Image 1: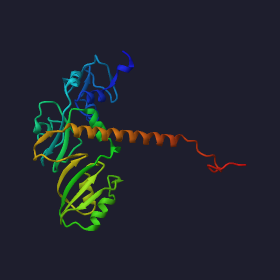
Image 2: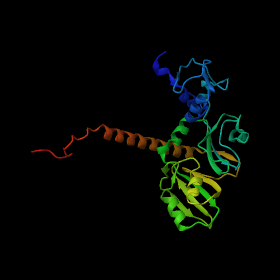
Image 3: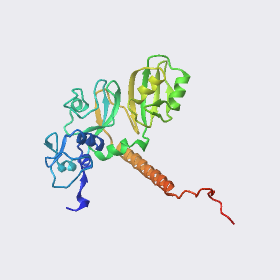
Length: 271
């Protein structure tokens, strides 16, 4: 078997639309994946003839031939964005009850509502979830006390949470206790943690836009993404990937440059 035909197990599960690579890594870490009856290590590669099972059930490469599904769903409060239907009874998969295997792109907290994508295309999941892709997500948020100009300024300037400072973002006051915020990163419970740091408590949170797609279906309903929406999304993630790769190459080039010798000054030469 040639090395070129081997595929990492997490990539394989993503490519056939079983789950994202991140979710596959979690399944592997939990020991729920087997290859030819054996539990693999992280990073194990498989051949086309290998038998892959998740929770004892075989997954098939034939799933690749099924057309990709892309859904825009208005998640209700109380629904959990997990594919683990064994553990969480109020999970997003059972709620939608779609006839094909799908999984969410990213997440919304259980007490939050609004727009979330679901798909069986692992490749687009990986592209959208890349931390450096800077894709916009817009939210309407209500808090437990009146919003001040200082709150808006500090939310937009960056707030220290989870060992880092959040990126600068667009924040607009909408009402006495309501504001709009556009994020380009996805830290865990980011908006809630930002508000908590500033002494506020979130009482309602709704995501109304992801990238170029706005929320336009009733709570608990979903629709297919249009061809135009998908074309734009693919263009956006491709451009982000190119920008990220260029950034990595530039960083690598800088690191590989020889350091000036002690006592010398870069850019100056003795005559």
